[in-house]
Amino acid sequence: MYNRIQTHLKKELTDIREAGLYKEERVIVTPQGAEIKVKSGAEVLNFCANNYLGLSNNPQLIAAAKDALDSHGYGLSSVRFICGTQDIHKELEAKIAEFFGTEDTILYAACFDANAGLFEPLLGEEDAILSDTLNHASIIDGVRLCKAQRYRYKNSDMADLEEQLKKAQAQRFRLIVTDGVFSMDG
Image (tube, rainbow, N blue to C red; front, side, top):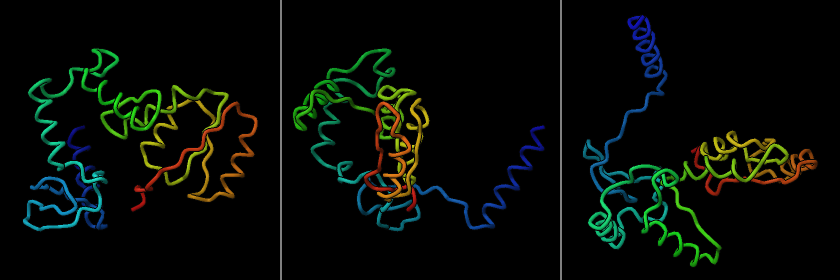
């Protein structure tokens, strides 16, 4: 059986390469930034990172991370709801909440985690969620994980959104979900 699967997968990869759709992994050999150097030696502009604010190579943040390594070690043993929450994370959450003038803040390890875990605890079967068709995959996954009735509207199309809102009129709560960047379609 393994040989059949292996043969099939090799053919699939060949077809993908021949169609010009095979994606080689880029190995970056410099710190993240607007300009990066890849293993081949080429220096390129990085248009596909999540480093929108350029914080990944900020000297102050690097120094703070080094201090945190010395005081708290590397990584967590588990998610916060199993082992607990680090004091430094609670301090950061409090500072962020104060900065934005909100009651509280919760940190997630990644945007994907935040979007995947946001909607399910907020909405039930009697609610509606209206999602832009070009939302990020993490938003789409989060919408799928919740029990709310789902409606999709055409990208940035307010007339279609209004139509979907009318269809969802009977639901208890209606939540409109839209991306800020629409990075999934290039």
